[in-house]
Length: 396
Ligand SMILES: *Cc1c(COP(=O)(O)O)cnc(C)c1O
Image (cartoon, rainbow, N blue to C red; front, side, top):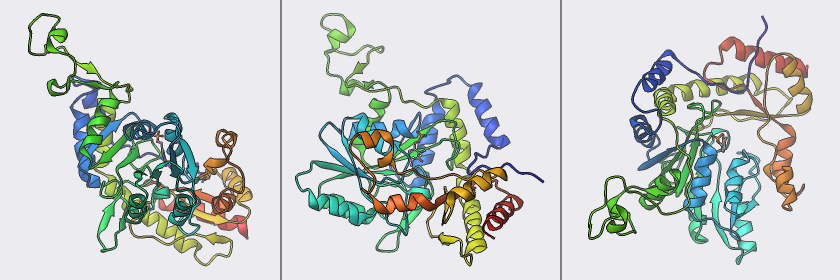
């Protein structure tokens, strides 16, 4: 039996297909009713007041940075172990990215490194922090909020890996990723390797009404369509003297926005997928548990964790010696493990901005031995056993 096993993969059912077909046969391809439905269902799922669906996770990050008014000269702190988009949104607005280091136990942005950055540079013009729920493990945002408040910073939670994940706050209450209780804004992606797939797609969640309204306008060119918000006079709008009401066609572009809309049929797919989100997490947790049990007494494992409460397991990462050898061997055997991530600060683009090797030793050490094993709800027991067997075979 030969296998081809990727590290992640979407799971599309007949019900998903039917819901997309239904959307395609309806009146709207874009800006239809399924978008609002998806937003409402998603907000309910994560426990936030508001949700704004957008064309992808990167667009979500960009809109967040715009809505928070990031501009040239301002500094924002994030983790180097993330997809580049988490940092790039700051650059889109001309801001400066400052990386912290990671906690080698959790692989998440180390709050102590963030505190050190802020305390060492009190006049540094820091405006925000972008923690990432990397691999599906929720950042403790209660602690980040306290730090952010001390330095008057906003927080964007990059929750692309963690819909359905949570951390326990200091009173033992579950705080869902993206619930808006601690972060100003949170973002999600519906790229096929993520928990919920819509093709391309993204979501922003928040409890802040002013930011929510701003995001709605920025998503569609900065256009508002609401009598109460117009600044031009009705007589101009109607192109007719002495008119005191706005004609039905009227709208205003009030700031420079974008077209970052999602389509109605993508929202249909997202909605249908969302119904199975919890089931997907259960499967992911079961897979994580099997990996843990299979490797827990193996000497070639330098680090892995057992099943952690609230972890959404977008990725299952182990740290090993001879990572390159293992990676290549697995590829030859049809197992396409992946590396998450090449430290962002060492991407040529960020090196050109002055970041360099040695800046974040823990993130760099992690990169030398991390490997993400296949992790997706439809990974079968036989496939997972094959993966485990091939890894053990490599090290004997
Ligand atoms: C996938 C991802 C993004 C970007 O999402 P897209 O929908 O691909 O634009 C941002 N941050 C993280 C951590 C991601 O994994």
